[in-house]
Length: 162
Image (tube, rainbow, N blue to C red; front, side, top):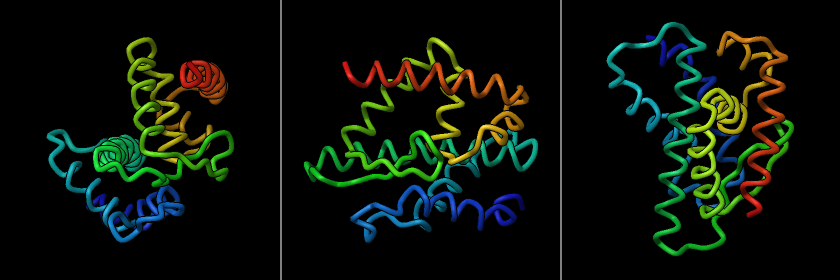
């Protein structure tokens, strides 16, 4: 089963995303991995390969973290932190649930304009993938991924400031 083969990698990815989460008792690495698995096990067509599986896992984790942020926001627990990467993959940025929701809304707008740019951001932000890995997963050149990343990052920066 592909999930079992990728479990350790998924755990590392989840740990990276949750490392700076202060309420680890309510959301931990295993919970995020298992939530992703539960969502992904119902995919009707399965997965083409490991890269496809991991790409979908990044998207599912994004959606779960956004839902988690919505829940935190609804409960008015201000100050909760969710770690995302921005710029360099290992450079942590501390965000509030409200900021995660703003990012999600901006990504949805970006997706309606350019789906590929949105996927590059998802894989980089939420998946922690490097440009070369994203290029391989999306079957485009690394230059295309770099260009998409620069354009998407600039657009998101402008969008999130307003």
